[in-house]
Length: 205
Image (cartoon, rainbow, N blue to C red; front, side, top):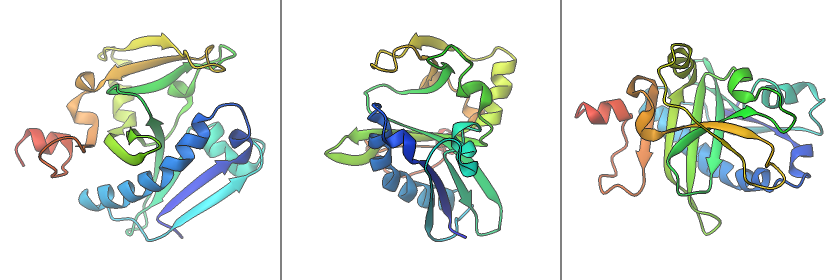
């Protein structure tokens, strides 16, 4: 069993959305980040990476990504398994975004995702520099608890990227994310390169 298991739906790489191809190129950076981040959190992963390839969304394993919103499964050395939805972004913003409705008007992954954690990473300077400018790991069920109590300052917008311009999304600015659900944050542009969970850094640990 590998420390990181990923499901690739090959059908997705053949469509007109080059974001899938860009995200694919960022996966090695994310894999390296996960090994270090979870080791820092006292939750070290097993060694190795396993890629499971599905031809279409109809393949049994594809449901993890296509239906459940799980992009990868992490296997810890203590035999626990962790599920993550991840988003790699290529802009100058500092937000976390979720799909509100898809291009057919159906409820998006914000409502169907059952992953335990949400990871967002901004590429430093794609495709020249594939490091993350900054990245954040969020307790996703914890975020949903805040949402259920209407305690989040959501913003809504339409996707302006053709052919995804019918998709609507919701987003939070970093500053509006409750500190209690931020598991880990790192910014490569900060002078202090030490990596701690954000709540620990704010407490001066």
